[in-house]
Amino acid sequence: MTAQKNAQTEHKQFKNPPIVELIAELRWGTPPVMEVTPGKLLELPIGSFSAHELFYKKFADKIAGNGYSQLERLIPEGFPSMPFQPVYRYRKSKEVADSTLYQLGVGIFTANVVPPYQSWVKFRPILENGIKLLLESFAADPNKQNINAINLRYINAFKESLLKGEGAKKFITETLGFKIELPQAILDQTTSSDEVKPLLKLSIPLKSNHQMMLTVAEGKVNEDESILMDIAVSLKSEFDQTADAIMRTFDEAHNSIYTVFVGITEKIHDVMGIK
Image (cartoon, rainbow, N blue to C red; front, top):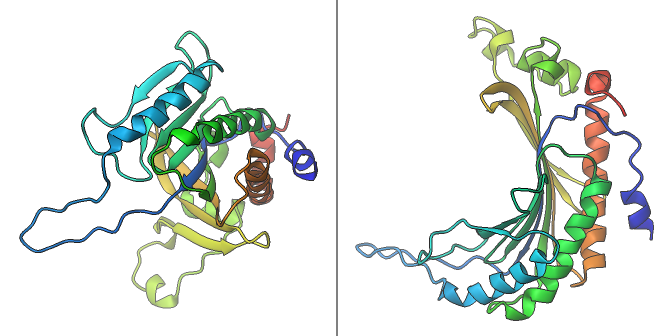
């Protein structure tokens, strides 16, 4: 009850959020051990993946009942499927305006949403329903194993409208609050410290026992120059194999990401437009 209540307590929502994509991911199993012998072709001990087709079809039949009837095969028929690589993508029909989708592969399930993204409260039931149907479909998985990794990832792009004319270094240091000081030895060699292009990558252990990875760097989204901020929270553990237990972990991950995002973007809340 507490996790559900926390999931619905979003103090701020934005009219113009910088989100590019939200990815909620589950993994199970372990990657195969690959042995390389000089003079021989690399062989992957991944078995016959045609057996997984029944698993994919069972999930497809269930999720189609929720309107996700459009299937896209991401790996060509007859090609081997690597572990943790989506094989099928499930969308709603083209006639339905919806920005969510599911993906399923060997040892991996994802629920994704792209703009227009409304809120975690709106996305949460979609994720939870996909997890429930995944667990119901597991009986058909030839390599069925317990889910042992959860990852929640927000990809954001701060475009010109949110940068207020600031360059990458100034935006990252003064707006987002990451202090970057160059050693004198570097300053002595550069023509301008303002033209230094920062790439910030942090691995942050959280009080919740999750691990946060935060990356900030310059990049392009649809040919638009942007400052990209990728925030992911991961937990590798033995979970209770129920939708409720898995969703509690996702709620904790979301709360951590939400708190960090709102805190470091405080100076541009007016530009993002609080609802």
